[in-house]
Length: 312
Length: 294
Image (cartoon, rainbow over all chains, first blue to last red; front, side):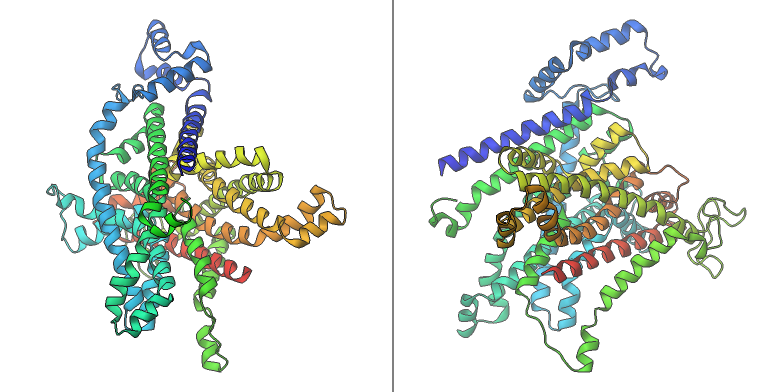
């Protein structure tokens, strides 16, 4: 067991290091030096001396390997360099933009879980076969809808047609309703899909038959016997959900004009602000790897069946 | 790994356990005729025709607007209305098909060729090469897909082809994993052992036996990735990183219509519905290929 845990952690660290290296190669080492191209732009009006100073600050002239070691050491200490656009440290930008995104993501995820459980239960207990089929096809529909379009349609319907949610000077919570609704759809889709599959599978197990034979009603069966077994395997897609949340945040924050990590990312790409994008990429890779590691390590504790067969 | 991978995985598991209905009478046959699948093929065929011969479907020019005809609601003359420059929206959608479709084809092409090659190499050579390649795939998977494509966009710059490459890069990992697992599965089959036993060289067995037997799932995966690529390319187009205006790319159409939400709902609704229809169709077709393969 210890060997497995150590190996799994080592693998995660290796992947992270490789992700950093890859992002360094793609974003910093490839096309001459992007920094110089950026600052040579006449709009900045910098003299040759000033440009030399900037080059020194970024260690641009000291060879790729030195730059690499320099950047790696800085990243380990949480120093992600300077935003070329805003001229402030990237870590400061991230810190100010993180809370709104966390709030949006947490609410969106919560809404998605409720939506997914609702869809999965309905697809299992809805009274008519055609209704069950309809509900079961909802997740594939959700996956096929572009998130940005969904956001615009929600604004269109709820703000402009029905005038339920104000877009001009909304309150702090009112302004979150539509973004959260938007974000919940792409998250709910894979979640509902896994849940529906699991519920279908577990309903055929003998212990469900026994419970039914003892006189348990369908709702009781679903809630007490099937649901608890069906919910656990959804943990395995936590990493995917994180990726969807982040991608959803980029699009949602852009459409609704919210400040956050997503909006920051979108602006970084539009302004070719490499250091900001690299920081976001490396941090999200770290988060993804950590989430998957945590799920892998926690799974045997959550599912007693895995503990009996010598560890994991 | 993306949500489309889950779609495929779930469908595979469901297909195995689902009992097949045995209906022989006429009404049963009508009921089991896959109307949805037929519709999906119809949608894709129509969109493909739009891309090949747009002038057959609309007489209007997608780039030249008509003065005085701005922001007209859908009517008999303009079935989807006109935009802020008086351009016919239906004409723009029809002419935009070629941009969205070719972008998606290029993207899937990149993912298919690079990913399949990596997976084939890893699965057939094994050992250290396999370990290194699969760690590389792990790294690709650890970066959320949108961020990966944005990283590539920021380096290559904006544009139709660059957006396609950026989306294609996100598909590499999925194709590589699938191909590797297929190759490993086929490799252990008895007929492959027999082919080696009867004197086949490695390259020949790979080409004659392993590759053809691994392809069906790859084809099903290609179809689903095609739909996913359409979605991703329209997202990049919407964010302004894809084709430059006035190209009638679908994502860009939605972005342009966004400024007229209160007055011209059709400008955003119509192109979005087309994207949804195409992606749904690609997913449905992929599902049917996947089921037929089993």
